[in-house]
Image 1 (cartoon, rainbow, N blue to C red):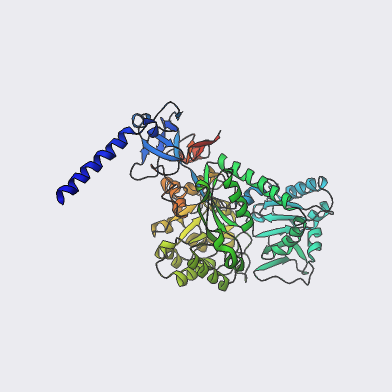
Image 2: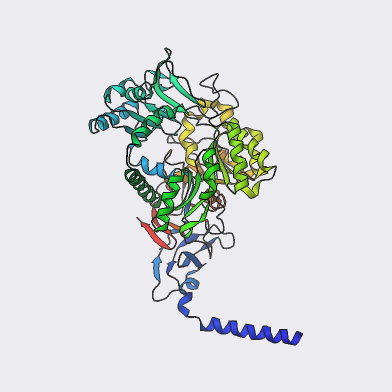
Length: 570
């Protein structure tokens, strides 16, 4: 019996060897080779290399020039990197994908330096817009207007002059954070806003001393204006609505590719948007890889959520396996839910925008149906309540679920270590730190800001995993600017916001690549330059790991490669 088994084993080995020898050499030839590069793989097994071979959409081999040139064939495309830096494709771990595209269509207010400039932009738009049509924009922030608007309420300008330049058009201008809107008189009249209008649960209408609405609607109160805008939008045909979204998607894709982004974690999409993503993926037209968090309400999730679970659909261009919910608002609009009142608005501690009961029900649904849960939490109270829900639903050790807290911007000291203990991922945004720094101390006071604002170092040293992004269109999707903020925490005036909390260069790179892949259960197929993984890379003009801090912002995206195809060249 033993002799027979040995003979069978030898015969099988001969057959396998013959098959291997009979294979065409072309089967081992690469479709694409990158040589003469400075390649940072973010793979501890081979941290640096000179060259990469790609076959179809995956990495065939990584090594030195001589090793990789062996994979060249008659039909192999070769790119000479000439010493340029190559890193894994940036993974934007928190953005609003269609919102990014829409921000490139509507009024972009981020460039406005003061309230007068915003009024001028709206005035010009009103002159070129038919009466009754809505004027929509995004990006204003009262704390960044210079000089501060006067008169103001809580730092917010009043609607009067804005209303004067747009008497025939309703205007809705979203706050940079997305957690407040500014409306003119025409829009407020359509919504029936007057001194008797009550604040909705989880929202606030900002008023003057005579109880008149000044034009600012925070958190859930946004819907009072947005619902009127939606009535206008709903008059469009299905074809028109679809074309509007396709135009936004096209712009968002291009913006991502120009910034070296190969995967986007879309932080809250609706079922109809997922349908559109799926249609594009079917036709190989999605353009960038998406990891989608469903933004539907609880009842919609219960009735239809499981039908939208997707994993690696369309050649790994579309995955839907997460749910996005909100526990609070944003710090800039004083909607972040704090344990103590705001320094600059005594008696106000922010807003709980989704009831804790609904959040816990959603958590149970997610656990039972194989969804990752991602809760937006900015304030220290918001973060604590989210962590409490996670602990109740998952138990003390929940790392296998990889649930996330989106933003995790302000933490009480006792809650920092809970991220690692519970296995919760902190999905943070480097550029939020430097963008918000101008008002963080004003909102929280020096002690609270230093102790718990954007405490990346504390989280990392406690063992927590941080993935990085920009929250676009809240901030620009600019990856280099975000990386710079993460490693310097430097403001425009040259000061640094509690620099002891900054990440190292390599920590920041990992937060933007392999950590993002892990946060989406995709570390086995992306996030590092490793044989067998998807061939998603970025070629940079210089080495962001070694150039002086002040030189990082001069770095250019030279090429973006997705699935072995060059999809962007500078």
